[in-house]
Amino acid sequence: MSQIEIIFVRHAEADGSWGNLSDPSLSDNGYLQSTNLLKHKELQNLEDFSFVSSPKSRAIETAKPLAKKFDKKLNIDEVFIEIPSKDITQNQKQEWLKKIIKTKRDKLPNIIKSWSNKIYFKSKSYKENTIIFTHFMVINALLSKLAKKDTIMYFYPNYTSVIKIWIKDNEFKYFSTEYSEKTSINL
Image 1 (spheres, helix red, strand yellow):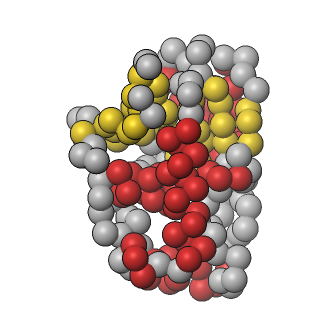
Image 2 (cartoon, rainbow, N blue to C red):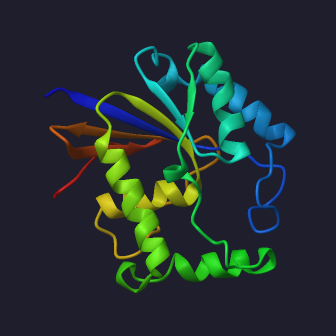
């Protein structure tokens, strides 16, 4: 079987914080960042990629310029939505998240474990090159699992950071974060 590439792109800057708004659009700077993706050196050859996005506005709006450039339909997938926090009040979300990212993986609430596992298995299931526009914690949940970290926090991707993962024979082989070298996955 051939090798496939999955590209994750963190959404551009939102017009409000996740802790204060449930589904903010992009800020003016965020729209500029999403347009700048058109010139990103890693995103110039996406003709044979499927385009997927979280259902959140900021992810969809980040994807639109590239989807238009490559004349692609943007498929919305709930699996890549941000970390589930529906029972957390807006004004408590930031503090809650600070605790969650320090919590050992085996001590996480079941809803977070399930969300993380869905991201892992959905990502692994792709049979074609795919670009996914998503969120900070989605990317962290996946990469921390691939790197065998004991928490769901792996790194701090900037807005519109590009993360590449390669899969061969239905197994994750390696990944790279923007401005870094490939990291092999020892399974």
